[in-house]
Length: 231
Figure (cartoon, rainbow, N blue to C red):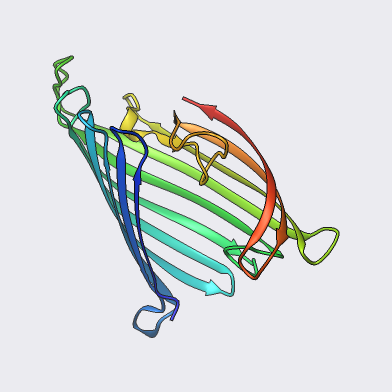
């Protein structure tokens, strides 16, 4: 049926932990539409707690090509330290995706191209312990691009997979705070660094993997990652 559900818990440090869940329902009402719902909660000890909900319908236009929309609600609740702002954000986004890979987990051929953009309205509740800022409304915009290509090299079992991932976030008439930034580092983003080691507003990360396939979805490999990160 291609239904998919996931639950992930990570405790990155003694003071930071994250819980996320996602469910995907394919071919909703027998139509070429998939629907996903996801939840995330991140607790930064006494600094803040972030709660995020996303609903994402996807229209499958042809074999490999799809268009998605996403509707998100994001809430930041200050912790006992009272050093971040209480805020809410409502976001809408779109994404186009072309995916011809023969296997999503361990492709041997094909490519992925994905381009997305979002716009959000963020409201900040006002004063903290370090200032008396009045409540205000801000606009938040993001852009993202992902690309991947898989090809055979010296044999059917040796696969070269270069990829690129880029994303940026911008806010009008205000400043990006820790809870707004992308968390980079670890196996999912920039390998060789600790999980969420860097907090950035823009990044471009290049990956190059040479893989020896040991099964349909398993392999041994070497990799090189290179990234540009901006605070």
